Each structure stands twice: as structure tokens, then as C-alpha cells.
Amino acid sequence: TESKYHRHGGNLKTRSTELGSAVTGSSLTTVLPASTTVKKSIVLSSESRKELAKQAKVTKEERRAQIDGRHRYLISRLADGIAWSEQQVEETIISDDKFQLIEQFFAPSGLKKLLFFYQDVLQQKLNASSRSDGSTNSLPQKKLFITMGSAEDFTGTCAFFLRTSDEVITASNISQEVNFGMLDCTNGNILQGLEFFLSQIMIPALKSQQNWGAVKEGLKNSQIQEFLYSVDKFVGTLSSSRQNIEDKIKLTKVDIDIYVRNLQKPSDYITAG
Image (tube, rainbow, N blue to C red; front, side, top):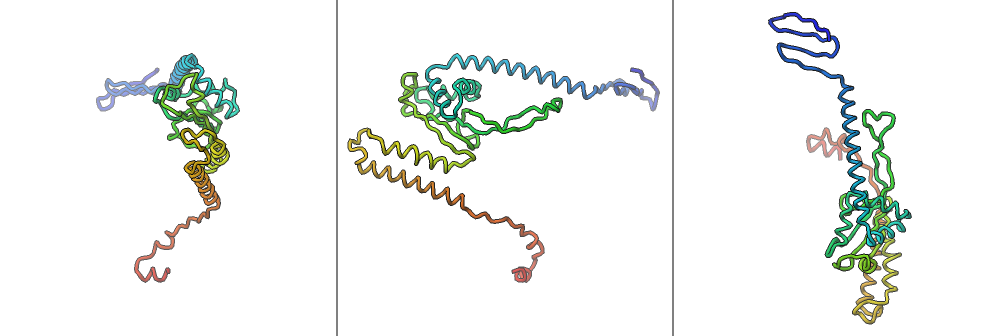
């Protein structure tokens, strides 16, 4: 870098012709081109992504090695429910951040429920035309993921597994100790999904139930009949609520500020009225 020096007021000043270095007295500040910083960030970001991908691959293989008959039971039910192959479901599950919830569900006195949401999720896609600035596009894509059911909005299908006891879940007892079901609430129609699940699946199953445990009379028992009547009534309430929501009247919001802005005295209100 060529520099020209001259004295002014006792201070030594330097004018850089290329890099834009500035010297005042004994201090030196070097300004690097912005492109250098950007390239360095991209390189570091690329290395970080590679390391994360490597760690994720190791984690997936460790989880794959843990899969046994219990996991196969879950995978089979999920594959049938959402029309995926068992291999697709397996790859999705072992890649899920909440994979440990499955083990907590299997444990003695473990989680009472295990939920999977299958719905549209916004996926970040890198914009190929402008990769240097890291811009992304958000595209909806069907995704199966494990959830606690409290953090994400429910807009699609819920596949659920429910425990019937506190016993440890094994490959030999999972079909007896775990119930599977699906709740279709596509487009967020939760009332309609619950109404369909109860009226078309649960109530017919209950009314065809032969074994009611200690109640020997079965469906002839007055308490059983009262219970079934209550469920029928609840479904009717769901149906009524859904229809009221669908047929609701939406009132147009009106900006009244222009009408009340200049109202100062009681007489102004009387005039406005």
C-alpha cells in the first residue's frame, strides 16, 4: 500500500490508496472488504452444518439400533394410518427430536399417551438464486412428528397411543396394553373430527361390547345404558356447537373514531344521537 505522509497540528496522518487503513499517531485501524467477512462466515457456516449433519447421522444410527418389537408395533400402526411405508415412518421417528418420549411411554408407570401429528408444516427452503445472503422460502409440506400436544397448532391428523395400565410395555404385551386411534381434524376442524371419531368409531364399538367386566348384565345394565345415553348426548352437543359455529354471523368492524373524535360537550352527544 502506498501512503503519503504529512504533518498537521503535530499529528501524523496517513491516507491509504487501497485498503483504507487510517493511522492517527500510533494507532492503526484496518478495514477489510465486506466480501472477505461474508466468505469467512459462509465457510464457517458450511463447516458447522457438516458437523451437525455428522452428529445427526450418528444419533439416528444409535436410535435405529434400539428399535425392537415395541417400536415395530407403533411403526406398523402409523404406516397403516397415514398410508406411508414402514421404512418412511422409521426414518422419520429416529430423526425426531422428541424420540425419547417413546422410551418414556414404554417405561413402567410411564407417559399415559404418545401423540403424533401428521399435518402441513412450513419448511425452510434455501433460495438457489441468492444463496450468498442466506435467503429462504417457506413452503408447506406434510410432516409426521412426535408431540406433547401443547406446543404446536393442531391442523391435521393426530395419531395417538394410550396406555391401559402402569405395567412396563414389552414386545409381548404391547397389543394388549396399548390402544391406537386417529383423530382427523384437517384444516383445524377439531369439533367435526371429534364428533366423527365418537359417533362413527367409539359409540358403535361400545354398543357392540360384550364384556363389561364386573357388570354381568352387559348392555342390559341400567348404568351402562345411562353411560351410553350420556355419550350420545355429548355427541349431539358437539354437532350442535359445530353447526352454530359454521352458521355464525360475522359483524363488520366499524371505525367509530371519526364519529366521536369531536364530541366534547353533552350537547354534542345529543346532536350525534
